[in-house]
Image (cartoon, rainbow, N blue to C red; front, side):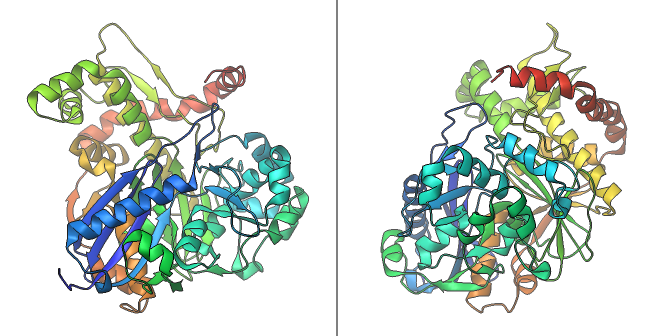
Amino acid sequence: MSRTECVLGIDMGTSSVKVGLFDLQGQPVAFADASYPLYTPKSGWAEQKTDEWWSAICTATRAVMEKSGITPDSIRGMSVDTTCCTVLMADGHMNILGPAIMWMDVRASAQAKRITATGNDALKYNGYGNVSAESMPAKALWLKENENELYAKAEHVFECVDWLMYKLTGELVASIDTTSPRWYYNRAEGGWPVSLYEEIGLADVLGKFPDAVLDLGVKVGALQKQAAQELGLAEGIPVGEGGADAFVGMLGLNVVSPGSIAMITGTSHLHLGLTDKEMHAQGMWGSYPDAVVPGLQLIEGGQTSTGAIVNWFQSGYCGDIARAAKEQGKSVYDLLNEGASKLPAGAEGLLALDYFQGNRTPHADPDVRGMFYGLSLRHTPYHLYRAILESICYGTELIMDVFRKGGMQPEGIYISGGAVKSELWTQMHADVCNLPIYIPKVTEGPCLGSAILGAVAAGVYDKIETAANSMVTIERKIKPDQTRHEEYLFYYNKYAEFYELAKGWMHSLTMHGCP
């Protein structure tokens, strides 16, 4: 077995965990993944179970070690990233109470609206707009009001990343990377916004939160014996504080200074940038102090269901194409991309709305849903597929426009995740947004970002910026096509207009029970 020194990153996404090993220069050594189910017992609900998480993490970690040929004692450090805001409760012995309420769960819609109505100054982080149903205050309030017995029994309320840190080290701490964006924590203003939590009847939850809030990459502790045995790793590996998958993914793209946008793609899209000044604007989340790099502010936009919509379409409505792909020895996405690339911008008059799980930004509206307009007997599955891809790109450009109005001028988009696999889709993003797209050598940004945090925790690098600069390689640049950008403008403007035109109509249908 090899003694090459490595760092390990655990990336917990919505549907699976990916574990990556990297050398100290950021070159990938091996990857492995394992999946876990997502439960949707009601419309707008999304849940998972911690025992299924841990089983998948152990399976993937053991697999990556076997695949790599690396000896366990050659791992210098490790860290993690997870979905956010995925909320859990535990009793005083850290026994988990109930399922995890996933980040994409919007059951706390009514609570979010009541929090919005307070007008508390802490809501500036929502761009003076709607509070998201995915936030910690909204979900905690829902739990208090709807799972009162469990809530009363709970001594700890925390996030997925905090749970995983506890499993690895035995230490229950919170991360500045999740508490600043989702819990309204501001270190410079004294920490928790007590007045907000008091105003919504949640003052008691502050005593259930972890006592310590740590910066990314700070050594939380050493990998404890039981976890090491179950994972197939060596006891005592330094474990660095982790955070939210997309925010940690910024490190894997080397977006650690102002000017560039990180776009993390997967089940959702997240759009992230850093500024050296506090910024708040309607339709933009943030800016969040110290959330990624100490001393810098994080701004955020996001689309709730992007890759999930693409997967929904190909798995449920492309049977004939899937059979043809199998016969040709290709992926179903190969044929979908081939067919869609032959169509013009605008999919011959077919416009989709990517609100399948509500809108995250700029509207923060959980009560709207997806749709297609313009369907005719001429349209094929390739038209629908292209319209879905385009709608997601329009949603990204809408977020870029909000950033511009807020004072941030994006210079380029650094992309990682599933969308990178589609040349059609990455070029489409460049064309719609009229911005260059930069693709790194390692497209699994969160996984590499977690490994970077492990390197910092182990003292391989002195700080996040140094580690990212040393471990990330940008491999190619996709330039926007100006002609296609101009062709897309008409359809983008129609997409952007639709929310205000139809939100009342959509709300009434959703509230009537449309799944």
